Length: 382
Image 1 (cartoon, rainbow, N blue to C red):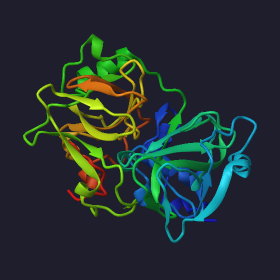
Image 2 (tube, one colour):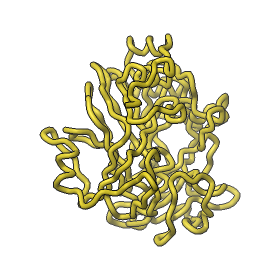
Image 3 (cartoon, rainbow, N blue to C red):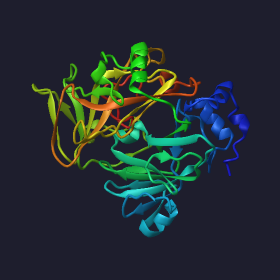
């Protein structure tokens, strides 16, 4: 088993040692420490490309199971128990296989966990996964929530994958989901977030009292720039997308551009998938990470941002960002819904890291979206 990864590949560092005495999200070097300590193990050797500034990319295993429905195993069952009742057929991913839109699949991941006291985890789809409208969630044995791994969990990890707009070609080792490790229960409050914004400038707009409430308000841009394009709507009957091909596809074959109108408004149609952008540019300090709250019924019957992680260094000038707009993946729920320019569509929650990461998001590590404007996933030609 490659889970016996040699410690010399991921040596212990002073910063990682410091993380043992604090609370917060583990940074790059502490993730490497967790691998060295075998709190994170895998069927194959870990690669440097998997380890992000504050998260770990998880890899698909060699098989997928087409299932009749989404599920959570609950406290009394394992994922394999549920697969025995719900699996329809097994798919070999080693040569590559198509996951069809509208279907639900369970894929055992290569990574599994042996978390110690005070260590838990949370997951989200990778940015490129969300921008293709692939619903990807993490499941654990005896789990009662998606995307959450309880403290001291020891066991395998599974991805529930459901392409919503495009059928996709995946294979063993494809990376659709990312994991963050959290030590303890970091304190958070609106007052602390306001102080952080006042000192750093998390967005390029004045954040008054009304803008910070269980997160920092993010609004939608429906005015557009010089091109007048405010977003993209996915074509309903587009072709197949290979998840591992970068800069390969012509956007015109998959997306219809949306242009600003005089009202600076857009009606979201149920069943349609949209890529929009925030009015604000966003910055994530080097000692924090951020997450977009995916759905809030108080702002409207639509879901924003399937892929909610923002790494430390996102938007920072010193890492090539100069403030970076958030791309919004949007679906309406059940009924048509009107959104207008400047309307609040989500909130950013910031959480501190246990230490500044040895690697930051940005041009230096080849990050795909550091200076993005209104950007589709990296699979499409610029």
